[in-house]
Length: 248
Image 1 (tube, rainbow, N blue to C red):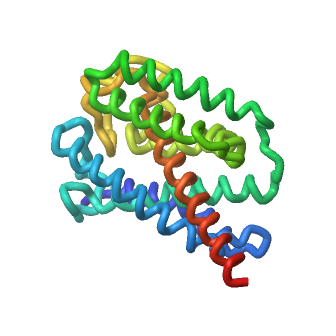
Image 2 (image 1 turned 90 degrees about the vertical axis):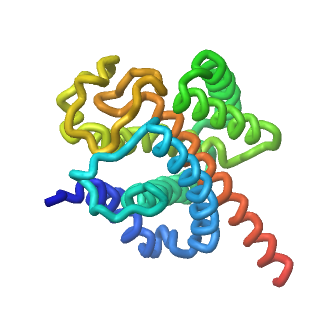
């Protein structure tokens, strides 16, 4: 019998943020009109990417830990991943904006964005022959460069949220890429030693380095996933605010 571990990971990721959304001090449910369009648009793009890479064998899934329901070649849990993780991350970001009104990084966030853009360009050029790392870093560079073209006051909160979220992100992805992830070295390049994973990776298509069991490439993947969700969330929020002002 399948143990549904991936489903439980999804539920664990979203449970506290979802319940806390109705707390009157946070009231994130009032932001759903901006969050859900942002989430679903991002999800559509990442699902298309996921379908192609799964079909090509860049990564895949261990059926022993799945419910057995597939859609477009992806387990239903993978679809839920693109809802639960963005929800938890955007919720956290919104909480930081509410309780820390000033940018936690001051104006330093722009320098960080420039540095990360350069790093991603370098990685994309250096690993262009590796589908996962090459494409992910290239897309990160494009997104980051786009945020530099126009002043984004929220980038300070975004970077702060991303850094804080790295801890739960590594834990949740650690479970997905190796159930006893904590038993592996913090940083190593022996992915072939990892056993009992829910999500597996073709190591010819990534850097080959792991944080516990999670490919370090996932740090950029997470950056892109969270970043696009936050960008669209802010865009829809701004459009909603403009609409309210027009009709006021």
